[in-house]
Length: 159
Length: 64
Figure 1 (cartoon, helix red, strand yellow):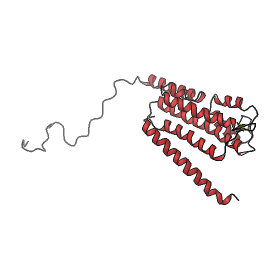
Figure 2 (cartoon, each protein chain N blue to C red):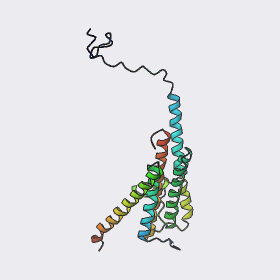
Figure 3 (cartoon, rainbow over the protein chains, first blue to last red):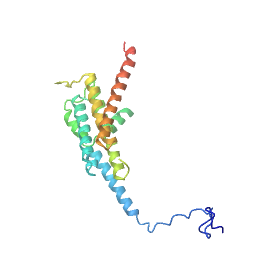
C-alpha cells in the first residue's frame, strides 16, 4: 500500500465501499407497560379536560392554559346561555340537532350549568338568541380542541 | 344590557366578544412563549375582524 496516498484505506480489513453496519438491537424491549401506562394517563387527561374545561392542562401543571381554557369556555357558555341560545338535547329531530347536541356536550359539566342558567328556555326568534346558540356550540368545540391538545401533550407530543 | 329577553348584544358587540375570546384561546393553546402568544392573539384577532367585516360587506349587496 502506498503510504503517501492520502486516499489509502486506513483499515484494510474494511473495504471503503462497505455498507454501514446496522444499529445494535435494543438491549431490552420491556418498555411496553410504560407506554401503555402513559397512553392510559393521556386518555384520562383528555376525559378530565372534556368534563371540566382546563382540568386536562391543570393535571399537567400547565396552569396558564388551564385557566384560559376554563375562562374562555366558561365565558362563552355563560354569554350564550344569557343570550338565550338554543341548548340542544338528545331528543333532536334531525342531523343538525344531533350535531348541535354533540357540540354542546363538548362543554362537559358546563352543559348542565347552561341548562341551569337558561331558566326561561331558548329564544332564537331574535338575533341575540341565534348568536347565543353559536356561542354555546363554539364553547363545546373549543373545549374539545383543548382536550385534544391536553391529550397530545400528555402523550409527549410538542404542545 | 340585561333584559327579560336575556343578554342583549348588538351584532358588532357579539362579533367582537367572540373574536377576542377565541383569539385568546388560540393564542394560549397554539403558542408557548408569552411574546409569541401575544403576537398570535393579535394576528388571529386581526384576521377575525378582517374576514368577518369582509364577509359582511360581501353580503351587503344581497341584503335588500
